[in-house]
Length: 88
Image 1: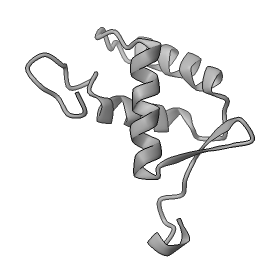
Image 2: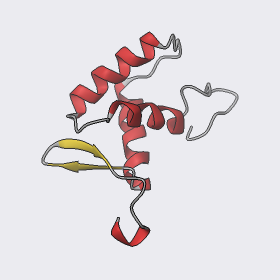
Image 3: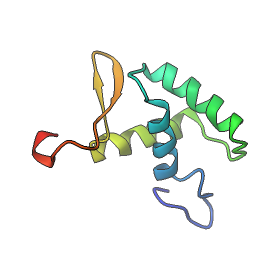
Image 4: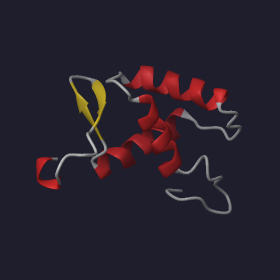
């Protein structure tokens, strides 16, 4: 589920979907905006594996647990990757 398995395609595992979500967060966006952009991006990239809203939310949960995103005033923000661990 988090990584690809026999039943979960590599472009649909939670880490891949999380990476795709991060690509949509070039600027702070609401959850709805991020979901809409992700669906559009996946269609543009010809990803045929379906990703439901529930799967998207699970990917957000993984990103939050990893400290890659945060919710600030109801807006998703990608955290900086160049910050020192003590500053996160």
